[in-house]
Image (cartoon, rainbow, N blue to C red; front, side, top):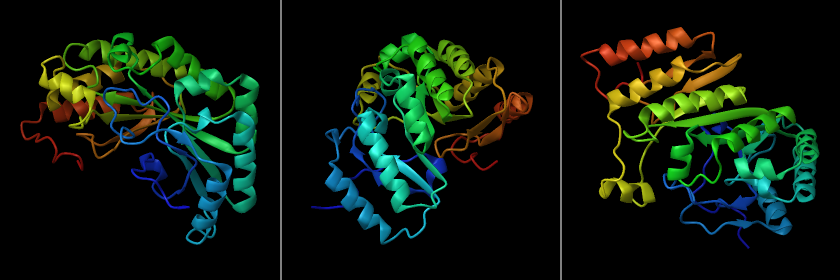
Length: 290
């Protein structure tokens, strides 16, 4: 039995230095039109024997990890009792770990009771990353996310209420040209309603094998230009209302690197985007470092 990783393996940018324990393979939803991350994988939960063997294999390389990220796509779909046992086992094997985190699908959060989520948080899972992607019901339906905007808000608020540190992501350009403004405004409203601890913007990157690529080829979806992406980002920031939220747009996909705290730095971030937007020397894809 192999105990290394099944590929491909993904983690958030902020988990670059974390030890990754792969406890599931793939994504149980795996129907999002834009997503290519796990399309080549059949979703499954790893057995207890596989996970313990995997952890023994990892211990040879990581003697004293401070941060641990649980992969793959939606660890919270695991039965609560099994997840609690796993978290307790991880803490016994790595007693000096300071933070355990994972992705969290909105449907998985909605299925867990408040009591289950609090128990999971108390057992050591501290930080959750949820891909909101968009706050627009039209776009959520178009990309087959599997939930609507109210369910997305409920999932996020539920996680925060249970005590998790919570990180949300929006994908710039996901509404295409048709839903550009709706995507920006409604995304700002949903993120504001959740009021997460961390919020990030990524830019839509279309994989050739995705369903969205087929829609583009058929003329059903029109990608935004780089300048339209900046316009959309400005609209989103103009409509957002957050409290001491750490904001980042520094992924490799972003056209302009942004960092600040919302809403304290909102004007500064908007002004930076406007300066770039008006700069005649703006050359997309070489501008990330400015």
